[in-house]
Image (cartoon, rainbow, N blue to C red):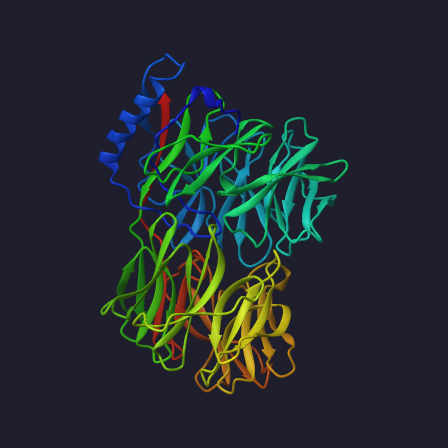
Length: 587
């Protein structure tokens, strides 16, 4: 990305849009015209009081894209920006020239994409394809056929382009291979650290690698490490609450730039790796994210955007769609099929839990928190569970009535709780807990009248439902080697693979408990399958239960959809809005 001299760009005031990568990609609305005037004034104010005497700031709109723009990465020569945007419901890779013009769509296949970076020579763009498997692909910058590069994620090329660094979903460490993906070697073994490691940036000289260590995969708080590629030793460089995927060199080998949320506002900050000090670079209401300093010194690129996505209910029999809420995701439909809970993100670092009818009526805000996520409904159609996980507090899970009454916190279970599922008699909860920095979960049972939860099984899947008898839990593995659908016997306490390799974000039992349902997305449609099942085992092969004539993201800050058990209603998130690329420079 090149070098960025902080002395040349002091105290910028930001404007833009944030998409917090792998956690949630929700664009935050901005009052563009007023914000732009304030931005110009404040940039001028700060710049005119520094040692730079070349004049006030200039803000130039580069693109006229006017659509969502995410994962922006600047080419090594500064001539192009790669990004992902929705095309027919799937996040695809695009290329935009920094001189302007219409972006070029580079991919058009199934699976949402996340861009990692350009190749050092700028001829290829590296990206992840999210189909449940660890896959990093490359596509020619000027167009051409994509190719699978390596069965891994979070790839970073070496500075000379001779090798690539990457991690894998199961959290075994950081690996290096040749640029073709062959001759893999382990450069850092994360076992025993309790952290999940990803490569971030190569140090100048090629002897060291800057890495990020997460306690649980991709919470916003992480630690920087300097890993020596010869000795394989890691030096702790301090803990930061920030977006690790934003990180670029400010002064190579010494300081890093990234987006960071403080008091609900995201701005660009720098972090000094030697004295571990943080310096705020932008001071506006933001959100400011993905700093892209131009290697030729032209300035710094940002993205400015506004969200207009929605949560939509599709009624299968009438084929009528109804918008329920704006900028919402994580829907969970009540057992009687009449109401839905979901999460909205009214600010960069805040979230709200809501309940409404399926037509969007009778809305009620249940809870507000830093990082809320929906859980499951109780059989009585009146109580729900939800989780909270943020940088400033320990992760927690709760029970609450849909009128906001009876809020009760679940006991701590040693990790991050996710999607507590009610037993049929509503006396117990089964909780999936991420105890390690991997894609695996430990399943706990908590009897509500007791104080001590009971561990059911380790290294299993995320539990999404329970059969009507209460004897089997149904779950799914989201990515990596554990991708697939599983069940857990509550008596034998065994995790059993039912459909290995199936990439989905949820599975539920049919009302009679004789089959379960799950959704799979392709490029043009979403298909819901029915798998006959009895006493912990599948019977025969999956059958197509419903084909929807459209597609939507499976994952949009977590599970982005739900369907009623009778398949009469599908509720799903529809990302939308607009964003454009801007250059902040000096006149």
